[in-house]
Image 1 (tube, rainbow, N blue to C red):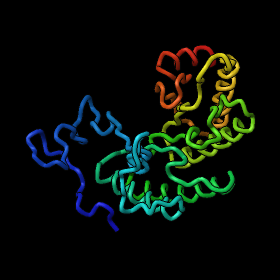
Image 2 (cartoon, rainbow, N blue to C red):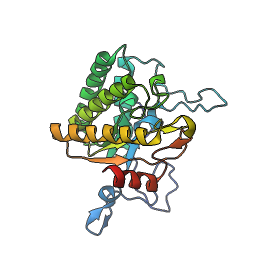
Image 3 (cartoon, rainbow, N blue to C red):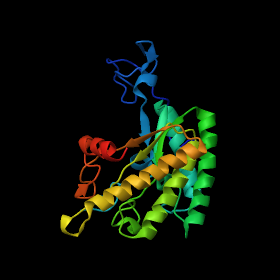
Length: 257
């Protein structure tokens, strides 16, 4: 079954093309300095905005109605979404994709059920990777959407939340490794503070560093050789995020690396 039957594979047609569904300047097979542009640019489709975004904002309701999505958090819906995604990747000629764990599989009643859901979807994703040749550029854990992370994950004041986040990252590294992912990303959207008068910044940063060292140590233990990456991004959603910009991340690495 095709979810985009009216769309053929996107091809390079040059700058004079009037076809809205064609590459005008990007030719994936063009060779530059001995490498194709496909290999040099390594474009990756992000799962969350592309397939999970709803078009909502603080002032309005969702506006994106996707015909394949039944609006539920069911496993069947998640598996169908994988089929949609890989058809999209291949028609776009995207060599890579990337995802958060909760983008691809629904959260269950507890961690065991959640991990079982993820395992089932990852099994299907692995099959689609083998069929299409599309690869995983990076995986990561969503440590920001659930209310448990209101005060952070690795920097939460609640040790139970720290432990849950650690278990979630462990599983995210497992599935990234299982899918042949080339990188693993840390983005601390909830790691930060609103006010310094109730924040022990050094303690929180110490906890964040310990958390990341644990993740790297675990990756080595299971044989994952991909890079670990920081994603600096300011004020989304935390007012003062610890990964505010590249300078903040570099200094964090200098201090704790």
